[in-house]
Length: 386
Image (tube, rainbow, N blue to C red):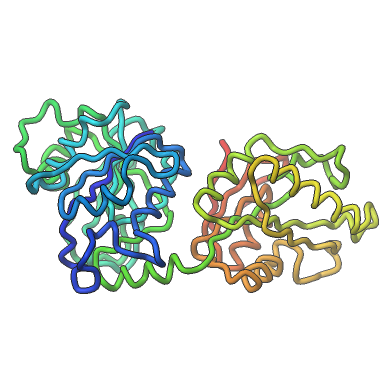
């Protein structure tokens, strides 16, 4: 996948707190804000990013040069202000794929790019919000086709344009457009029905640092350590039932790739597991600990570092505070490592895994399909593996 990041704005609303660098380079916890966006794209295996630059372009060009981690960096230089549409039209010449993602360099929206790409059509990532007036509302029909972009006003609950677009490379070819134009006002709004724009709905983390208040919020949101919490049996390894020997232990076919995705975004990785077999006498605590060391060794051989394993050795009838769906193990990890639950993730194969994480304050919850029945729950989860 490839992306264009609009990084050439003047950032006038942020000038009171960040005046010496372009807005995407505003320091957040000691790193340019754009680094966090690029980390996210790198985790989704983007191969090329075009930075559409203008204002103080040298700052970005000198910092990133032609590569960031696994991503090739190319520059589309705006010699005069062209508007969001004009600079995007210019940047399209550097794209090799048929479709491209377009992002704003001052906004973090942690969508699932792989899922959005599957729409294979012009689409806009939309975020549900409550009690907002800073953003206009996006109105769409039952098929998620966008019908209108409302002006900024107070909205109790609705969806906003999250600033991530998925567009064909040739999207502008059949339209008579000025050299300078707004992507949103002069293109999307004017040709909305002809374009048949799809809304891609996501409840992922969203933050626009365009105003001082939200820039300060970024300092808080990015200061804590992010964590990926994994259930063991059924997520890390295939669940044969009370796995406790090396001979029984086989990694699932997705776990290494999944861990690498989050590890590349600087998440700490933890395993959180119920081990009632200890309490039932099916195997000893030392059997579990030996297998735990073996698991960590195997994952380390694959480039994955497990920070720590938290486990509950009790039977369900023991009514302990650590057995999932109770949140004890998660809360212990959060306290010990000073973790940021708002930006942490849980992956489990049972709803009790997700419920435990939810009770600890984590809202990004993924369920791996397994042999276990799915039943109605009061908390939100997403399917992680198709």
